[in-house]
Length: 104
Image 1 (cartoon, rainbow, N blue to C red):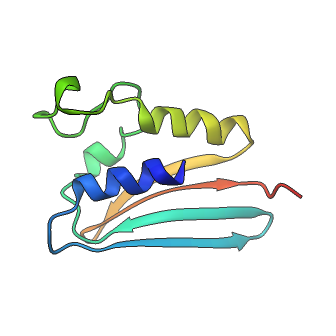
Image 2 (tube, rainbow, N blue to C red):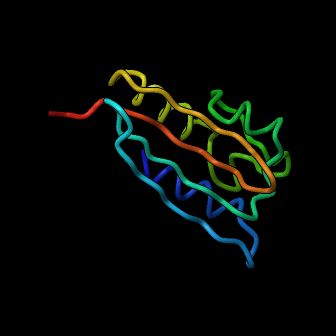
Image 3 (cartoon, one colour):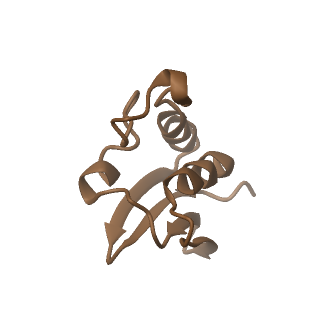
């Protein structure tokens, strides 16, 4: 799940961008999020990135890499373990993350 989030962040980041990974235990959940400080992802696209076959970049095709399934699979895996996913854009920073109950 994390590799998928990081790979997607790297694809959307311009050369001068920064990716930051955060993880914390908050209440009874483990929260993991990837922050992309220079992403070109719009707020409208952030709202849809977990949809099956959705590609935020209309110029990308299956031939150019990616099927539009990676984040949908992440969502299914997280939800199957009792967690949730999110994506947002705020002040030029795209945040994509998930939370899971601890495995203890």
